[in-house]
Length: 151
View 1 (cartoon, rainbow, N blue to C red):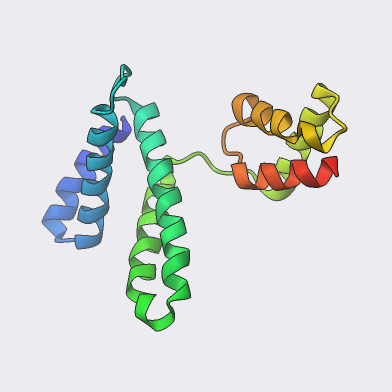
View 2 (cartoon, rainbow, N blue to C red):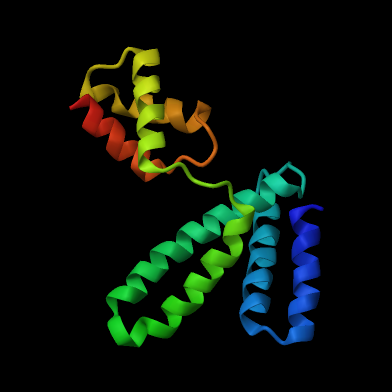
């Protein structure tokens, strides 16, 4: 079953159950997919790859927003709870991310492959990993580990 089909089934179920949180997040993802589809130059299909990309982008934005609401303390508590639900709910359609040790191994391999030894080569190594590395690498973690390894 495709992600689109799963979300449609979930939407119907959430409507019956009057689950406002699920309704909101599913509708938001559908809006984001429509927006991505209408972008100039979009030539792809509406497939699982598009949904995963949209969901990953959305989760990343919501994670950042959640951090900002956390900083607001008590005033942001409800928003933090809502965003946490959305991130957790959508997580099942995202590839699992590598932990720090696994990412460190990927970084070490890339540095050896590219024979990088200078901190000025960090961008080249990061780009290589993000383009050719395994699914589920965290770009910020890769960046930090590459810079540490090359210093």
